[in-house]
Amino acid sequence: QVLLFATNNQNKVKELQSAFDKAGLDIELKSNADLENPPYVNEKGETFEANAALKAHALAEYSKLPTLADDSGLRVDKLNGAPGVHSARYGGEAHNDARNNAKLLAALGGVPLGKRTARFESVLVLTWPGQEDKDLVVKGVCEGEVLAIPRGDNGFGYDPLFYVPSKDKTFAQMTTEEKNEVSHRGKAVKALIEKLPAWLAQ
Ligand code: ITT
Image 1 (cartoon, rainbow, N blue to C red):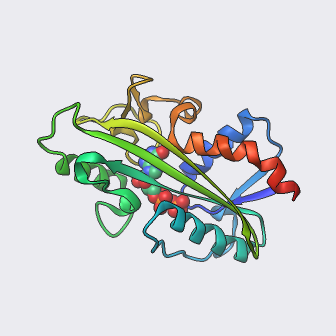
Image 2: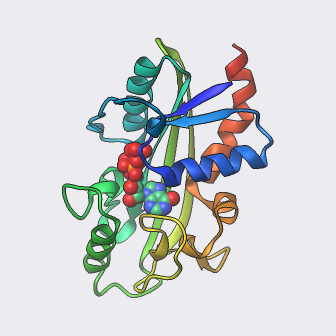
């Protein structure tokens, strides 16, 4: 069975592939990079769920494949939930991880450790082309804290700043497998994998 992951972010693909491999799923995962001229999706929704659905529906229609999308982001308590759905472009028009991280650190300037609590959220929407009533929606959350100094070189985005107490590591200090054990996306994928066989068989 082929499944399209409607994403331009290869780090997300790597994490999902790792979770699928670990579960022994016999699924061929493709992504936007495998398509010719995939449509641009304007993520204009105000929630992760709305934006994941926009991506999944647009790419399912284009590819005619069962399609999965992830919309995710970081919500910082002291910043009233920002950057939230704007996480990818927090630092400027174009997606730039270094600028995003710099802006986050500046925004939290004087806030001491212990008061820099935040959570990552991921919503996955899985859809059949033209059958949106059958959409499967799963979510995952990971609680942590935004450090003042980055740690670790793995992963992407805000990973070097996001500290997870239960592992005593940032996401960027974890392997992909380790990150999947605790991360927002890892938890959402776990819920997805449980429901996937029944969904594919319908
Ligand atoms: P696609 O829309 O093509 O899937 P994207 O990276 O633009 O790729 P989103 O619109 O969902 O994805 O934006 C999510 C942003 O939130 C992402 O770019 C990171 O800045 C941040 N983010 C989400 N999950 C993350 C993770 O596991 N580690 C670090 N940063 C993450």
